[in-house]
Image 1: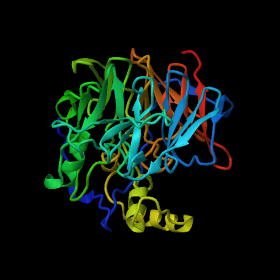
Image 2: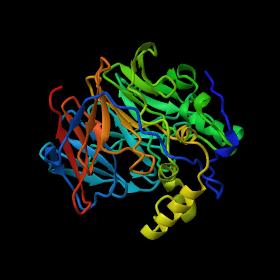
Image 3: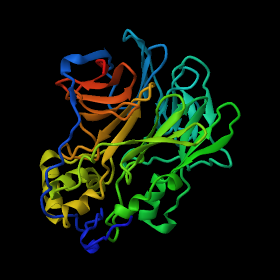
Amino acid sequence: MRRSRGNVGRVAILLSGSAWLACGDSAPDAPDPESLLDLSVSAIEVLGTSDSLAVVRDLEVLGDGSVWVLNSQEPYFMGFDPDGASLSAHGRAGRGPDEFAMPSGFVTGGLEGEAWVLDLVRHALIRISRPDAAWEEFLLASPSLPPGTVRTGMSMLSSSVRTARLGREIIVPRSTVTMEGGVMQFRLGLLRADLVAVDPESGGTRTLVALGEALEDPSGDFIQSDGGFPLWYRLWAPCGENVVRVHDRVRNQLRGFDGSGTEVDPIDLPPVPFTEVAPRQFAAAVFALRQAEVTGDVATRLSEADSLRLLDQMAQRVQGAPHELASYLPRYVDLRCSEDGTMWLQPLDLDLGGLSGGPMWRRIAPDGTARRVRLPEGFDALRFTTSRIWGVSRDEFDRPSVASIALPPR
């Protein structure tokens, strides 16, 4: 049902010097009835590290116990055996033979027991866990999946793209939307991508789920202004061997679709993590977007003093009601699943700043039972198995290490 938009003209998120949104303070969040599992720093088990490790963008755990990470700089890929010994550090930037133009994330679940990465520029999946073997890639290009149609639906400051194995097929997001209809329709088009199943043996493709048709239209609850567009994330993940789960913002559910595309029972989520956002919270959430515009690129960072000045300016210029601001932001920023079908959902952390999550996750059993799990400070989760959480731990000197946390029995 489409709600009244009220005083729409007061809300605008424009990245070119226009007014930033909202005034008023946010109301307290509704009480959360879920129990809390608090994991301590002592639970972190470091597997391995490297002086070349910068920012870990993705991580894959293979069936033999080895762990591979996607690094933010060369060497792009590092592998560790189950005992933490280095397997390899490789991967050069470039467009020549054996080089990577834009590695954008691992294929969740791997392929044939190996780690494969999506390169957006090559429009191909490339095996990276056997660096001493001959280069092997699987080209995605086909009449139904032309180059340029596999696109991110998450952070606008990242090229990360979710792909995953489901049974013997690879699921990739496909979007053919253009800017012809404007920024708003382009952004919504990315969220409404098709999840396409690709057969790695034949190269054949089929549409598993057309998200634009299956999910409720989220724009009905969006309070738009001139030039404003939503900052929501497209969240989906394979949950078990034959089910894909997709976050439905309107229904507040995790919708499910099996390998044939048939819908299975949805999972009802607990109340949304927030319904109102204060001006400074909003300014902090979108700060990185504004900083990128000010500096001219996504890598350059302002000094601490200049960051505070810019944040103060943004917060002072925000106009609109707290519920209007909340309609712009993603409620959740990541969805992962373990092989037994347990779902892990990460809420946006308004206190942390940025369009990212903090240490709190929601662990949702296949029967829908939910529990909050707070990870130790300095630990970023990237993969979940039935028994462990895998990710990156940073020490007091901000040095990253590949690490895991054993999960206690439910």
